[in-house]
Image (cartoon, rainbow, N blue to C red; front, side, top):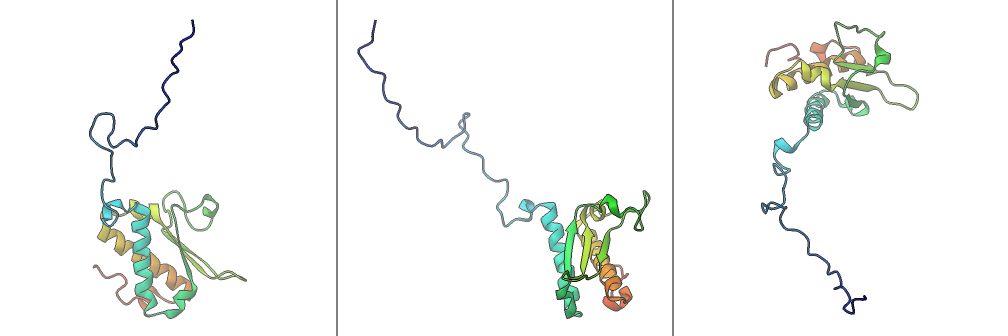
Length: 151
């Protein structure tokens, strides 16, 4: 028994405008210009950048230094001055042949030690000042006269 009527051709479906519950497609929780949509890492990078720009006004040679952000210190640096009780918040890498000097700020240890954005910004600035001072062979107070002041 053959059916003489061919099956109807499949018509292309228009794109769905609503989900299966009829509520509409989900959109972003917040528009991109609102701080809510920025990730923690991006917010932390902004804090480091603000601190570096603040110091570059006094020390233009900081433009030649790379500032890096890592989540946590690597295990390979365990013998270089930190133990289970103290985890470094930052470190420096001296300039080598073909590589500029680097200042590294560790994001997670800084975030764990702070409660809010203002406190985090102050600690990030302290870490950057300390590492720049170590790299330049100066005291932190020379790098930033407000170092150690409660803001």
